Every structure is written in structure tokens, then in C-alpha cells.
Length: 559
Image (cartoon, rainbow, N blue to C red; front, side, top):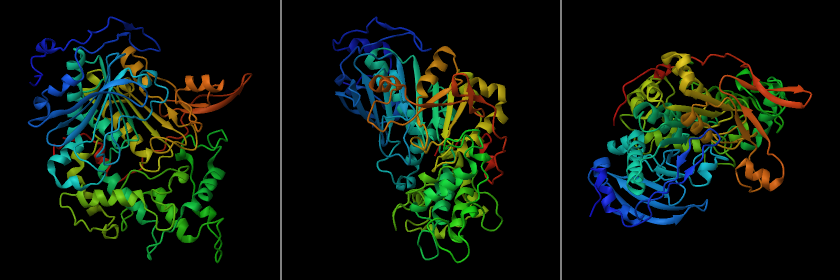
């Protein structure tokens, strides 16, 4: 017998005798709402009969429902299922301690897997203690390749449908299991998960109350084709060998710091805003006739210049992407577009070929298509436009999300080696142009983290919690003026700063990050040195490029 989603009132008649919702209320704390702790109203296994056809269509169903313990030691009802035709999803519903909050986690890369661990939750007590129902999806296919792009339905499921239908299915499971809808719904994703976060805000503004979008691959069409292909191509000599190799990256990074560390008023190995760093690799070019591991050859210097600059039309010089990796990111280039070893694999080449062969063009080339066949010119760029409204998430019209009270946190590492933070800055600027700066400040905050790589890690503090500030903003109207970013733990201690302090007897190091465009400035007073909120270091405009119109409102494409 299947449980019908309609009418919901009949669900109570099908309960199988589990304890009713507890009347215990978790008190308001740290700016979060006081919410009743709710227990399940039925057994976990009873969810196997829930009818999902009204959400995903015929063939949508729960495939398993069993009680399990998570890696954090939380006992949950682990539900897996399929939304037609092939969207896999997983939902974990706590048996104890659910405080009526739902969190959906985005998926990175080309997805094809399910991960329930979000970025930017370091020290988020409600998450780490199992107070959320958590869900995610594989977005309609298995495996991290791009061959699903040949199927129009799977393209749509990856582009937007998978995350939306998973949200609907998860909420149906919550309502059935607890006899209570979530009081607050949140989404957090990084990389393509950040693109998915913005897809939700743009296409489905009523799915979530608060959204965290980290290092978003919002320019999917350009990012995974021209940008990654360029980075791999410009570092390849005519004989196929790599020009720059990983062993030279520390030399390049030191040269950047020698020139630019301190421009922000502090010598700490980090660049608070790399746009003020006018670094030219020619400063460490070898003298004529000299080849040394302490300098760059002319070819290596040119390769580094082109990597920083990003793709351009090879004839006219027009920019084909809004930005490349910023100065200070060099130590992260290894394995992405600079090989770790001779003939080692490159992420940039792999993902560019998957995108070019199967995803970004209306007329896909043959599976044997090689990067050497790609032309960097206006014609190639314009062939990407057809699927821009399908895959991209650059529409600045978030008025529906704002009108329903939604809150959005954008974040990006300044040393991101995959997706340039200039993309996220450009989107923030587009929001202000379209909606007006006062309106954007009402529901959007953006944080740029010095020294942080793609989604996590970096040369400086990189552990942060953006979920708690988002909850506080949504639930009590308190927007965060400061985010504390902690030094990553290398000792195996828990992520929570409070837990780490209890273990070590000292407070872990952190650096504050303020809403863009403010930066953290180091000041000295009678108490010693401390960071405080400082004025922007530059008002450098986003560079002109061929896709600037991508950041204007557009009608989304369904498939």
C-alpha cells in the first residue's frame, strides 16, 4: 500500500505506533529561533510506501529506508530513492533532536554521486549535532563524466530539475515522518553546488529560506569549456610537454609575495585583495642564455602570464572569460592545469573535454574531439550562448527570492584555482545594477576569503561556518558583519572551534572577513595587534569581456 501525499490529513491514520512529537523546545540561542524538538510519528520503514509520483512522475519511489548511524554518530532514518527517470536522492532524518530545520547539500563537478557533507559548516553546532534533516542528489546520472549530456532529460535534471525535485521529495518525507513540515529550509553548495544554489534562488525562489552559494560555477558554459581548456592549452608546448611544472610554483608564489604582500598593510603571506597586485612574471624571467630553477624561461613566463589573464580571442584579444586565477593562488595550480609530475593528469583538460564533447554545444563534436581542435574566438564563444539559459546561473533578477524574505550568502576564496572569484564579484555587481544597492544589502552578503583555495584549504585560515550566520539572519534578522575564518586543523581535532579550544586549552587562530567590499585591516593599540574592518583597497572595475550580457536577466531554458 502506498502512502498518498494528498490529503496530508490521512497520514496520521497510517502511523505505526511510534512515539508522538515531543513537547521539548530547544531554547533560542546565538540568534537562532526557539523551536520545538520533534520526534518521528511513524517508523522509518513505513516511508518505503510513500508515493512520490506526484513529484517526480511515474516510476518515482523510495527504494530503501533504514535506521543507520551517521559518521557524526547521529541515528537517522536513511532514505534513498529515485525521481523519474533517473534522479537519485538521499535524505537523512534524525530519530532524536530534529529542530524543524532542513538542509539540502549541493554537488560539485559534474555530480553523478551523492554527498551529504557541505562546505563552510566548520563549528556549526546544529549541523554537527544532528539537528537537521539533510538531503542531496546525484542530479540525474551516475559517474563524473559528461556523456549524460546526450540525453535531453538528463541535461535538464543536471541543470536544474534534480535539485528542485529533491527539495520537494525531502519535504514530503519530512512531513510524512514527523507529521510536521520544516520551519526553515536551507541550501548550501560550493563549486557546481554553488551554481545549484543560485539556480534555486533564480528559478525556484520558494524552495529555500536561506541559501549559501560558495565559489559558484555560475558561468558553467564558459567555465567548463573555454576557461579550463585555455589553462591546459597555454601550458603545453608544441611538442606536447608541459611548460610550467609543479616544482616551479613555489618560485612563482614567492615572487608574488615579494612584490605584493604588505600592500594591504600586513606582512602575513596573504593578499587581502589580489586585484591591487600588479604582478608580472617577467620579473623572474631568466637572463638570456640562462636556464635555472630559480627563474623562468621566456616560454614559462608567457605561460604564467596567460594563465593569470584567462582566455582571449586569439585574433582580436577580446576577453572570453571574466577573469582567471588571481595572484597568490599559484601553490594550488598543481594537478589542475600544471602537472604534478611528467605527463600527469590535468583536471582542467579532463573536465574541458567532457564539457566540450557532450554538454556545452547544441551540435556536439565527436567523442574523439581533442583540445587542440578548439578555437578561442568569438565564433566559438557565441556557440555557447544557446545553452547559457539552461546551465548558467547568472540571472541577477532575484526579486522573487527577496520578496519572499529569502537570504543569500555568496562566498569565494581569493586564491581559488578553479573558478576565478572575479565571477562572483561580477554577479554581485550585476545584482546591484539590476535591483539597486540598498535592496541587495537587504538580503545578500558576499565574503571573499584571502588565501583560500577552491571551496576549502589554502595558505591561510580556511575553516569557516556560514550556515550559522545564515540561520541567524533568516530566523532573527541579524545579518553577520564579521565572519571568523579559522586556521585549518592538521591534528585531527574536531572542526568546532569550541571543541578545539577544549582539547588544546587555547583559542584557535582566526582571521575576520567582512562583507565585500570591506577588508580586514591590522591595527595596533594598547592591547596589541588586532584586525578591524577597513575600507576597500581598490575599486577596480570588472574587466570587459564578451559574455558581459550573461549577467543580465534572461528567460531560463527548461531542457
